[in-house]
Length: 83
Figure 1 (cartoon, rainbow, N blue to C red):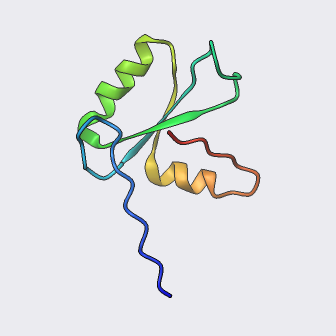
Figure 2 (figure 1 turned 180 degrees about the vertical axis):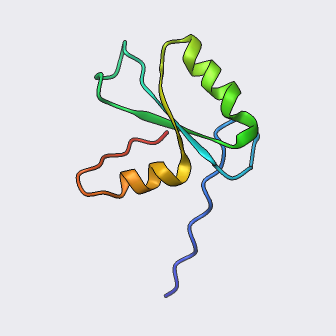
């Protein structure tokens, strides 16, 4: 049986269906351990807006090109927590 191709990752901005170009790694220090990283995906058009949203709350930890993030996360021992 053939499996369907996985859908292309899309931007996390509300109602956006553009392909993800960036990963915004963040955590909420009130509820997450310091090393934990949650992720939002962003297209080029929404990268700055989503970064500012997380940044003003003190949540934003890193902004990485999607291709670099997926390469980094595919290494042995890497963990991912995307939401």
